[in-house]
Image (spheres, one colour):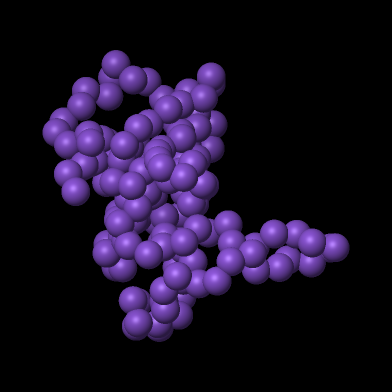
Length: 139
């Protein structure tokens, strides 16, 4: 599958506001076909540029303090199909084709696999892969 946005894209014509959250903007990742929200991550300007250059979603990890391309360990990459921004230019909606059986490091198709029922979080779906096989250990 070829990324939709491969090649350098001049980002100064697409200004985003990285000033509100210490240089980061939230990026909501949505399956381009099903419209299901798969995950939410954060991007700094370098992650944004990498995403545009490669066509694969790249985030900035707040806990590891470094860039990471989704799927670099698992192979479950996110191929960019469409990018939208909100009215304040400080949040992204990225529609993707997800490569692999899931994007959640816990083994689910989506990071949003639990729902609140009667005051308790209930698993609303079954895992789609075994994270210990993919990552070596459960994260």
